[in-house]
Image (tube, rainbow, N blue to C red; front, side, top):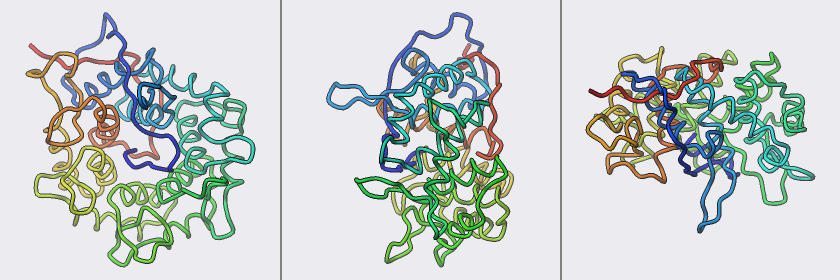
Length: 334
């Protein structure tokens, strides 16, 4: 999810495949966005990051797409291909770590994706994702990276770990307490733990409150939700600190607000729709959601669209499941 940073490869990537001949037309904005996103996947199965003309697997954005397809309930064929690609041993290991390397955020995110797609997480790409994640639980309750490059675990990785483990009925109480205890005095939650000044972050708070709701901490989740509402811009969007609103942060915030702060959630969805390419745009771009009001940028649109879909579809991370309609819809235009 934008800034689902884990400081492991998670972002960017763009590839094109032909649209299915019988793609269904839809007026639903989330469905149209999910259809566009599916058509950007290389071989219909994955995203790739491009660095100086050299392409690398982008497991993080591919998982974001799986979350988006589950939320919208469409493009299930692409989601199925994506999870098969992610389960290739070399793809799995490169993401979660191998040997002495093990990354908490990657384990958590991939575990949640496997659960959404109904896959055996005990033997996914040759890795026991749940056991690997639990091996990274420290006495403090924090899920931390085991790496010679440093510990880049944060509130997003902690939240995804709890969301995934809660589905197994085994979310450790000390991990929930650790996340709750990271709350800033203003009610929001920081992205990074243990900093001298606790600075609440929109992306982190939107994800944390979903994890706390799922694991039973309604009080701190409610305070975090109130902080989110206080950070909403007049146009309905959310940004980073004083930055202008963007689709990534707004998508996560709208997902967290849905069903809890309906008025704020409606405004956030209106902002997301304002960034979506409609029937007046170029046909290949229809359904895509720009990162911000400056316009559609091919390098940022896939991630922005994936996270915007979460807000448009109004399905929390805890309730995502696969098995939606197989087709990747196109926006219905006269």
